[in-house]
Image: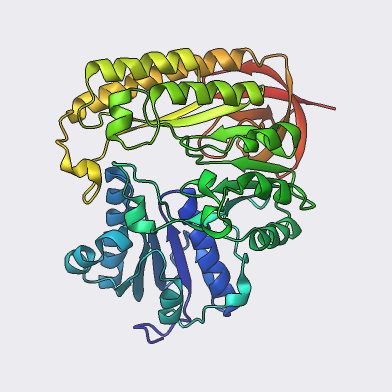
Length: 437
């Protein structure tokens, strides 16, 4: 590849957005390394002359961050600080013509399924034999584990099918092989991700196969925790709960984005469920897997959301007492079904509603954490930061959930190891403890 400078090519991959993008960047890095390329992930040394930006196009804030990053590196190219800039990922998939017009200084834009094309311009060949091979960018003891791509759900507010396409499951044997490769590298925890994990298997096996997949993955030697994310509530395969209850490797944790509880909102959102069914499902999950930590994601300010709709959601959050919760202000996305509706809730009202939900959740989280004082939990330690070793219980996923802090002056534990920790004090989203034998 020709460049303006005489320095040896070095590729810096920048990842924006969700865990699915992290996974995609890791696959890209694995392919580049297998081709003998000098490639790094989010290097801060400014010594790379080729930049690949893996973008997010999900909601307004994420889109803006992606655009700002593209502009920054396009300007760096203009000033001769880098030689080539390539853009891939969701934003590029969705807005390629507009981006080419508005930011022409980028060398080339690629979509979410253009990996072979991207590799080709980087002077690399797509190696089909590298199924499941990738360069882990997370701490080496855990990895995101994508079991399918795309989504067939018709949710009115979501642009993911536009960016990621239809649902495509990966075969079980391919995923088991990938898990074995990761375990051989020291990975102990797999964060199972997909646009819709509960739809897994329907396209290639004719029925939902998530429970069977979990069982097969749990048999991989070296994998100690399996964590399930992004489960869709409509048509949830309850046999997954039976496997989760019986199998100690599948942690008692479920990330299930429910989005709302008001029937008018659920209907308009095209979620395929009702308030009554949602409440019953949450009850069933908790009955079948006692002690499970439930995480959900909600939307405030969806078109037509009345004060009554919102208050119903707020009261439901207080009653249900989710262990973990996140909430987004509704983002009006082009080419989605909801874009045909009037975005009639003001930005100020959206933010007030987000704050009200998070204020309620903060209190719930504090109360639940206070109940943990004096109890002992198995903790996986992710990092050392300042004077603390920082880890997670089985009830917490990295980046988004609670953390356990242990005083590094008093106790020692290796990052990536498990240890039993007795909780001595608690805050809204943090637990403090001491290592016990």
